[in-house]
Image 1: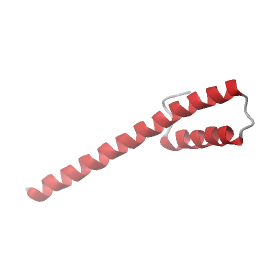
Image 2: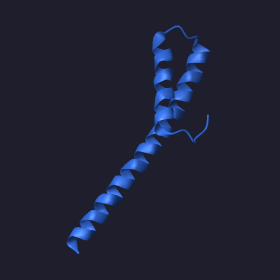
Image 3: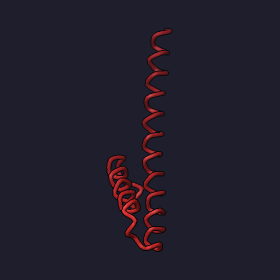
Image 4: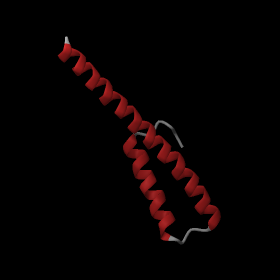
Length: 69
């Protein structure tokens, strides 16, 4: 799995993993592989969200600095 997935790609893949796990028809070994893949996808999503948060915070800080000047 590529770490180069966009947020939307990772989120959609994670939704697919969750749906498969929730179906209950997956053998245990496959469930464990799906769970591990889901963990990686969730980490990719979190990384994208953290980056977006940093961008917003930097934008706010820059705007506040401009307003105080």
